[in-house]
Figure 1 (cartoon, one colour):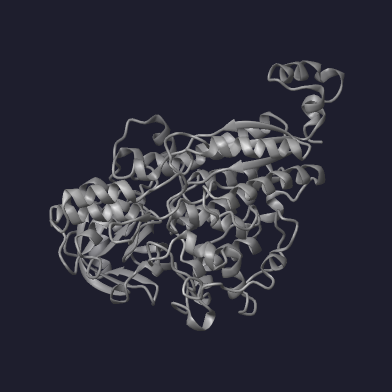
Figure 2: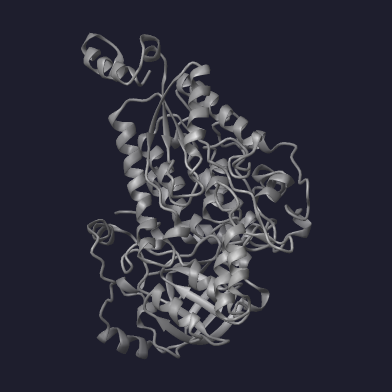
Length: 555
């Protein structure tokens, strides 16, 4: 066993003595050591129940013949960190989580690892750490929360609250109505109920083969989720005894092709691009945006979930889950690599065999797809020489092509104030810059300004571009991850109010209508603008971070 390096032989008597101090017995020491990598905290609603989840999992590990050993990691709640300086720490926390996983698994010899994440940066941070250490690892998320209910029975989620803020500011609803939405949008523990970043990543862990089917869709407080956790615990002990499969066996170029195929089919969060590029980097191979767009162009969008529709994660579960989406897409010859392995011991093809949608309104058949191409699109042009990302599934038809004057904001905070103060008019293109990995630093998520645009009733006539990123809850003509970012000399940093920006999502283009001579003249006098921040950690992140087209990882 891998754990023998810390517990076997005469020379390891001191090590065993320390283990006994934690309560271990001779019998415990003889068994496989199963790391329980838990992201429980009392800040994030998606994580507040994970202490109880860990207890259930540890109990099942013991029954299966393993010795569970739990440690905990940090986590940032993007919703609570949103629209203030705290959001600068969110993406950067992914790197800290990765480093922490590597530290704990490397310093203490384990035979297998069970990762219990749930929300945004915690999932990819754990995946990256698992790739570095490459011991048998299985993921089992905390699960999504149930959908909230409005006064008239309509579905509510976190996005509903942000949009209600703008609606209240605009005088469209009362403060009492806003308070009702606030109190009922997030009814329980679990990740937010739409296809936001947390649920997108948990779904894609199934596709990567790191998690058993159901990881992304089984509701957090359901009995089915409890049995899922037990099954993951049992499988972890089996993997420890078998010595695999290992994360690097699972996360290959073929598996990542599958991830983006599923992502396009289900209309996942734009943040999935950042995180999956980071996985590729940790696995040791390059994966570029052009390849992602090629997959998008050939993959139909057959599922739309909030914020892109009225459906939520419980609806996807009811319709058959992520494996059913893959089964439908697999009807297209060559769309999936079905022979890739998974932690279940089956290939992906074996897992999806015989599945079909149980609700064709939620998971559509190929002949009734929302579109012939995917839910995400990669745009290029003079404003995005290295690419930009848009969640196409959440864009209204009338906004697929848009041309209008730029309204420049130098930060998210400035943009929020400007939108609420009616500085943005129909037809405009909002530009939020200096929010990239280096410029921010930290590449803030921008649910607030995009929600304010929607809440102001401008979603059908205003576009937004940024070198920052968006929440998975964002919808509308919102284009992020603009690379190169302003801080590294990207053209977005040279724009002026009134510049005409042309966006054509079907054609995958985004350009500003300026002559080469005018661009050169502006560049000659340009100076980088970087937001000042006292944090020593964010200063280190700024120095080392790559741009979004490379996953915003630390170089």
